[in-house]
Length: 348
Ligand code: NAD
Ligand code: TYD
Image 1 (cartoon, rainbow, N blue to C red):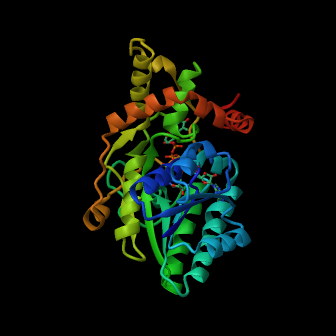
Image 2 (image 1 turned 60 degrees about the horizontal axis):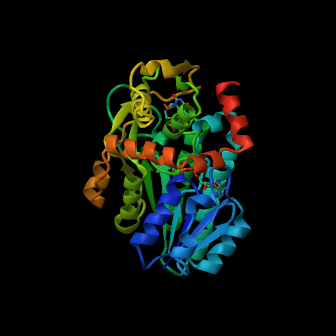
Image 3 (image 1 turned 60 degrees about the vertical axis):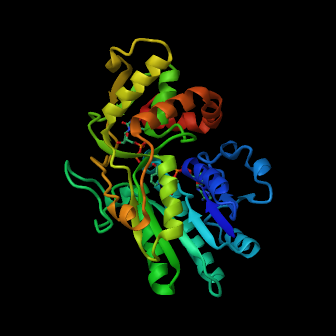
């Protein structure tokens, strides 16, 4: 069975591809990725050799309808798992149009190719989405699948648009679409612009760790392996046209995460984990910064049997260790363009 994984060279996608190849021997995985700044072939190192015959990499832009239709003709996929996206909120503030193009037009292009390809055969489209489509919460409550969409950033608005298109293709054309909406992921191969790997890289570089606002904003965290376990379950057990929230009931405020990282990093460097706040600088808040996210994953637990396995403290310690052991990887992905981006967001 052929399965197309878009965005398979990115953080969550590459972790998914490794999991799928090792746990689903009956699948042949075709990674479709444009290799933007966030996509790296190094993230897929060794797979060609280990899984030859069951793995293909195709460089293509999901918004390029000719390239996507050709891939559908060549591969006749039974499943599309759509991870490809522009994924970083701060970049969407600097340049929203790339987000509209990839996340909205790209998703529409894939949905339409699937509609044409699956006229005479069954196929399932798994739309990978985010809890950010629900907007911000106050101090209490959690997002359920019935929470109205109220995105704040160009990133989350483009993801919400993509979700609505996917649901419309289900209602109008009967396309077998399932949507998962997950909370903040962490783990290996995350591009060092997102909170956890960014702070680790700053610490290693001897720089202060920039916390937005007062650091009290809350995110709900899940290890990437647990997210991907949920994606596999949604592919295999999800009901057509349904949305499943994925989360691990692990809310933390940003300042606590940064302090936990500092403790782990200082200890790893053989230094006493004291005076943590001397490593932190509070910087100007992100425009439209969502206050709090919290996912209610009850539906996925009930219907899919979803059970996250990684305890946050353990997963965070392993992640810190991974970044310390893989400094070459995160230095290699930090191109000149990346450094230019950092100075735009944080100042010189
Ligand atoms: P990422 O930025 O690390 O990777 C995105 C991948 O998509 C890269 O490999 C990139 O090259 C590729 N890509 C970008 N534009 C493309 C295009 N036009 N055509 C083809 N490929 C393109 O992102 P991620 O963190 O791995 O997120 C993957 C998906 O999961 C996204 O859809 C995101 O919205 C969703 N998600 C992420 C999180 C999170 O915490 N990171 C949480 C919930 C949902
Ligand atoms: P991020 O990893 O960008 O994910 P998202 O915005 O999609 O939730 O940010 C997580 C939280 O950390 C968010 O509240 C913003 C905050 N943050 C900082 O305080 N400083 C930083 O340098 C970054 C990148 C994020």
